[in-house]
Length: 265
Length: 95
Image (cartoon, rainbow over all chains, first blue to last red; front, side):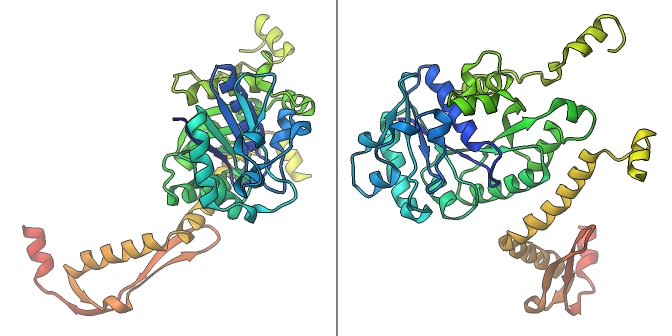
C-alpha cells in the first residue's frame, strides 16, 4: 500500500508543479513506483514541466467518468523506470471531478504505487478540495514573501480542518544573500510564523528555468543547487534523515578570492 | 531621494525583512481570528465559567469580539453583571 501526498500552497506561482515534478522524479530514481496526479483541471502544466505533453491520450476526467481504464490514462515516463503521470483535463473545469471521485481514484492508485503525489491547483475552492480529498499527508510550498506565507498559513488551517494534520513545509526560492543582508525573511522567521515542520529549503536557482524549458526536472542535474535540495526532500519523504543544505556556502568567485587573501571573513 | 540618502549613510535601520515579519504577524492575527468562530465560542464558555465564580452574569448578553485597528488586534468582551458575589472570591483565594 502506497502513500498519498498532496503538494499545495494556496498562492499560485510558488512552485507547486516544479516541486511535484522534481520530488516525483527523485523518488522514481530511488527505485520507487510513483504516480504524479495533476488536479489543475483547465490549467494543466505538470505534463509540460515533465516533458510528457505529447503523449497524452486520456486524462483524469476520462478516468473518473469511465471513458477509459485507469491504466490507459497513465503515461509511463520512458526516461525513469517507475515514474507515471495522470494528466489533468485541459478543456473542462474544476467541477468535472468530485471529492468522492478523487478519494476513489487515490485509493485505487495507492494499491499499485509506492507514492501517489498530487499536484494541487492554486486557490482554496473546488480544485483544492478535490486535490486534498484522497490525501493522507500534505506538503505546503511557500516562498519567503508576505503574500505566499500568508496564503500558506490559511492553507495549513484549511488542511487541519480537513484532518490533514501536521503538514510539512517547503520554503522555495530562498536567496541566501538577501537573507544575510536582512532583506528577505529567513527560514527561522517563516517557521516561527507558520509553526510547522520543515521538510526542505530550495534555493533560488536559474537552472530551474532552463530545466523547465527542456522538460527535464532539475533534480537530474548534479550541479543544480535546487536539484540537490529536491533530492534531499525526496529522501526525507522516504523517512531518511538528511541534514539541511548549508545555503551560506553559495558564493561567487570574488568573495572566495577575498576570503583567501584575507580581505573578508 | 531621502530614502536613498538614508540607505547610503546606513541610517535605514529597519531591515525590510523585519517589516515583512511584523506585517505578516499582524495580518495573520486578523486572518486566524476571522476563520475560527468555534474558538470564539469556546473562549466565551471558558470566560463564563471563570467569571461565574466571582459574579453572576447575563450569559445571553455576553459579547466577545475582536477590535481591529491598523496596528493591533484587541479582544473586547462585554459582560453584563447581574450580581456580585461577596464571598466566592475570598473563599477561593483562601482555599
